[in-house]
Amino acid sequence: MKSKMTNRDKTFWAVIIPVLILFFAFNTLPMIKGMIYSFTNYRGYGSYDYVGLRNYMDLFSDARVGKSYLFTFKYALAGTVLVNVLSLVMALGLNSCIRFKSALRGIYFVPNILGGLVIGYIFSFIFTYILPAVGMAWDTGWMKNSILASEKYAWIGVLVVGVWQAVAMNTIIYISGLQTVPQEVYEASMLDGASKWKEFWSVTFPLVIPFVTINLVLSTKNLLMVFDQIMSLTKGGPAQSTESISYLIYKNGMDGGQFGFQSANAVIFFFVIVAISIFQMTIMNKKEEQL
Amino acid sequence: MEKTQKTNWVLTIVLVLGTVTVFFPLYMAFVIAFKQPSEMTNDVAGALALPAHFSLENFRQAMEVTDFWHSLGNSLLITLVTIALSILIHSIAGYVIGRSMAAKKSFRLIYLYIVSGMFVPFSILMMPLVKQTAQMGLGNRAGVILLYLVFYMPMNVLLYTGYLKNIPVALEEAADIDGASTWKTYWTIVFPMMKPMHATVAILTALGTWNDVMTPLVIMSGTGQNTLPLAQLNFQTQFGTNYNLAFSSYILALIPILVFYIICQKQILNGVANGAVKG
Image (cartoon, rainbow over all chains, first blue to last red; front, top):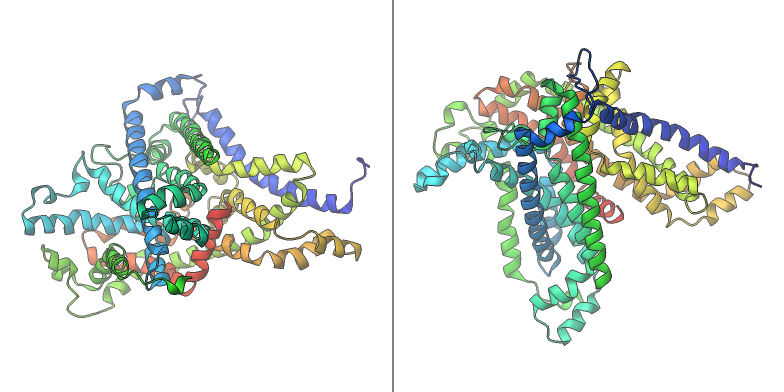
């Protein structure tokens, strides 16, 4: 029985083996190579030596890397909270009894279909010219200068653009979550005389928790990997205050002669993303079980 | 039930007013794209007032500077080929894995192996891939397409195997008894039945590839070829301080996807919701 392969099995293996080779060659293999490079002092060209764990030790004492982690985490944390609160509110609004429902849903999704790079350029103009001009007209001190030129507040500018785009996506997911809540549940809570606020927290929210999980994992992952907006808004500046991890790896790994060192950075970054995703999923799974 | 509820007009008005957050940046880009640099005074009105007259001169110039038709062609080529190959290859991979997973441990492992690729950030692959594609002669559009096929495989295989659970095995078994080969059964019976999922896969893959900057940036940098977003990045210095020219170029880059969205809005929203819920 075991030794005899049916025709169906043969076809299946004939399909899956080339697919596996392709996936291995352009996903697993480069990842392994990246891990190997992380133990070398390779600059991207020329000869190189193995340096053991030195890159990893240096990572923890490198001020620029530290700064990029701080920025990326600050950005992802603030972004995840804002995106999920805003998109849940938006979804509740767009799912209630309103007029022009489908047109409004369509319009609010537009930011997500537009590319982050071009959107970044457009917002860059708003931050650099429109807002300061408004600041001048109203004589509001803090608005007179471009937020993107401020070492302290430039990250907020990047955050606004990131959130603007991400909310569109997460709203759609929350709407499909809200649509899974059966109408009878609301009727029952209405008969009980529950307030809208209480209804949301004790009836609606528990039922859409699976969608909260999806959205948390999705938005955190995307925000952690921020690249396009940095490229078009700040190029990591001013004074490297908005340099995200992806941007730093790209910039110094590709052009800065730090191929080996930034490979080590990328390996750590990979484990950070996996750890955060797993952490979020376990927490949310526990929440689901409790309810 | 819906009909008996009253329309919430206050909320409707709030949400309609809220669309300003979406329209304002687009409106601004649009009017600046049509203006002459001399119309751009330093106050708010200079940027936001309607142009004195609508002329397409900026757009003509922007097309010339950024080699628009060429970049558009590259973007279309990469996106369309990626979609077509994704639907063909990822669907059959999803089918093979989905139908074998329950009975065979090896396929269960293959499934986990491919799907776990979703957590691999591009950053860790980027530098080795640039070397690898260059060595293989793939530092070009074909290489970018091949990489997209690999990058979107985890998500698409997940979607297809998930969808397959809704398709009863009985049909395939009947075809098998009739003597049809597995290959033929797949393309004539199963593949057409997965049509809703093909749409979802096509839309998610299209949105991802069309707007992607990083992959073509690092892989195609030696070829002198641009995709539409990449052209915006590479010609940034040539726009200089001529914002009108720059914004014409941005508008040109946004128009194709906006038109596509307006035409297929319903399918896109359904596709995205579908994909996210299953994934």
